[in-house]
Image (tube, rainbow, N blue to C red):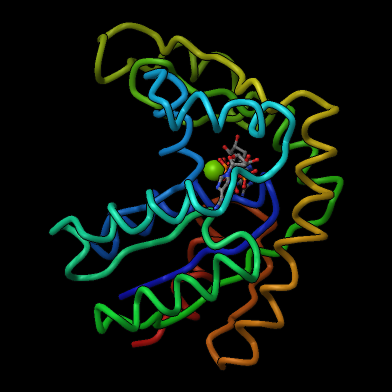
Length: 218
Ligand code: AP5
Ligand code: MG
């Protein structure tokens, strides 16, 4: 199954992708995660991407498209994939259509995760990531005691949690603006192709996951 998860920053794309990986046995392809890895490694691509990411702007299409082209060429995508955070504007969506047409693997469904603005801000403010195992948690919804008791599968110790550098108030506001201006037109684009399913992505993670599974093609 070839799925795009479409939604604003904090709408749960990463969280729901990880559940889909377990359920559907297909890989998650997150351009945000790929870019953050390139930044951390200090590759030339990472150096170029860093400034835009820190400012909450989109990284240049050519960089992201090259990353996607390479990633879709890997063998684990043969049974399908979940695109998380890509495409992000109409130009990327058109380029994706062309690429998937060339490899004979068109999209099956695009799921829009709908969350209101206040909830997005709340979720982003509470998000923390473990620097060793990449687990994403939320300080506002996960009790502190349970976080302290949980052991990181990599170190065997409590998670070492950090806040993403682009999760500060000013950058989040800019990311939300970019979503409205450049990404939200994709809703109409995919509706026009008959691929769009929209779900209420508020409520607990398992509940949202159930709604998501219910709209996937059988
Ligand atoms: P990216 O990493 O894609 O960030 P984003 O789209 O802003 O989305 P987030 O990762 O912030 O949110 P999410 O929807 O994954 O939510 P999550 O599951 O973590 O992109 C970062 C940057 O990279 C961009 O700004 C841009 O610069 C660049 N970039 C990336 N892709 C690009 C592209 N294609 N083109 C150009 N540039 C690109 O959940 C958020 C929090 O809420 C977590 O703490 C989670 O635990 C919690 N949570 C999740 N679900 C629930 C729930 N149901 N109830 C309560 N809490 C929940
Ligand atoms: Mg994410």
